[in-house]
Image 1 (cartoon, protein in one colour):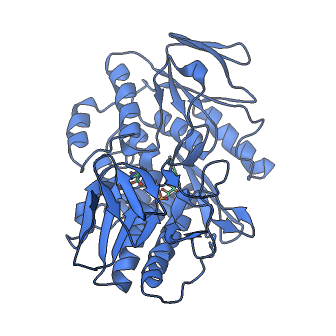
Image 2 (cartoon, rainbow, N blue to C red):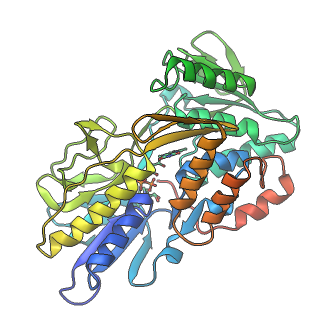
Amino acid sequence: MVRTFGLMNGIQFVVVGGGFAGVQAVRAIRRRCRHGHIHLIDQSGSATMVPALPDLLSGRVRRAAMARPLEEIFDESVTRSISVVRRVDMAAQTVETETETVHYDALVLAQGSTPTSPPEILREHRVYTVNTLTAATVLRDAVADKLRLGITPHVVVVGAGYTGLETAVALRHGTRTAAAPRVTVVDMASKILSMLSARRREQVSRYIADQGIDLRTGIGVSNADAGSITLTDGTRITAPMICWAAGMRAAPIELAGEVEATRDARIETNAFLQVPGHPAVFVAGDAAALRRDGSVVRRAVNFAHYSGRRAGANAAAFVSGKRLRAFTPVDLGWVIPLGSMSVGSIFGGIPVGGALGLRMHYIMSGFRHFGGGRAGEFYRTAAHLRRQPEPLDRFDEGAAARAEPGREEPRA
Ligand SMILES: Cc1cc2nc3c(=O)[nH]c(=O)nc-3n(C[C@H](O)[C@H](O)[C@H](O)COP(=O)(O)OP(=O)(O)OC[C@H]3O[C@@H](n4cnc5c(N)ncnc54)[C@H](O)[C@@H]3O)c2cc1C
């Protein structure tokens, strides 16, 4: 049975994904269409401050600040389901979750992205990631468990993009005693962070080496058995904890109907964020192939935030026959926080780094938080960069900290 909501003949909006884009989409719909019924479906039930997840490993930001339950963000005028959306039938205008089929008059897809699958050779290993709160918590707990037992874990991060490097540095920053995990980072590419100048790349490489991180470029994993992996330079690493940071793709949802997508599964839209041929379906955030001057923009909070807002506003305009407005991504810049250093570029090319870049990163994380008191944690970190309220090796408080926030996300 197809479930419908609200008043008879009421307009039904469905938003999939309650992250940066989805939360903005819901708010924009509500602003423009006070009587429409909005159904927000998210597999975790919380909006997560994804850029802060490496800080869960360093303990620089409290875990309780990493996510906010959707039921705190929206009142009961927004129906919220904690469910995994599996399929969208764009001809029938329905969204299918594990338990129900929901009709929509307008749909916003904002399901974000997920790591690419690790290669088959790693099938006998537990492979960790840091892209969700659950995943980052599992990695943190696994490292902390070893440290508690007096074992020095050897974490091998595969992928030296910003996620991999942030993770590596956060792991080394996570302890306040001598017992830090060993960390190796490998990447098949010949150099890290190709958008940086040679001088800044050298600065980052030196800093990473100073942190005791073994960074190897032009190197991948060539072989693995249950107890070890072998790198393409012949190095064998026994009992590795593998963290996969070698690529992302749009989170998978089967779309029945004609859709074009990029190689990393981001859905192509027109300028109004509609799926061509399916005007009731809008896509925003990491799930969308947002283009600027013809090129797909990087995955970033600001693009997700503003595209979500535009997709929601256009969905509301679409159902009431009003004019839709085009979305143009505006690039405000980026900062990569790496322990006590940072690199970044803002407002079209002004370089930032050091403590200033770090403070900007944490202030923006507070500013882009999903409301409520949790944003304050990021402003405190920006003000006191040396604070570390939940280090990896403060074992006694780990469990209490984990019990605090809202729900956990089931991974499909
Ligand atoms: C480790 C890391 C660090 C980052 N650091 C930065 C940074 O410093 N600055 C920056 O600008 N960007 C950063 N990014 C990128 C940024 O986090 C993303 O661009 C942003 O989160 C995208 O927002 P979104 O709303 O599209 O997706 P998300 O924020 O990922 O939200 C998607 C939501 O959809 C839900 N969902 C997924 N699939 C389904 C499904 N099938 N059914 C129901 N619900 C589903 C998820 O639970 C999630 O709540 C980082 C990313 C990572 C992984």
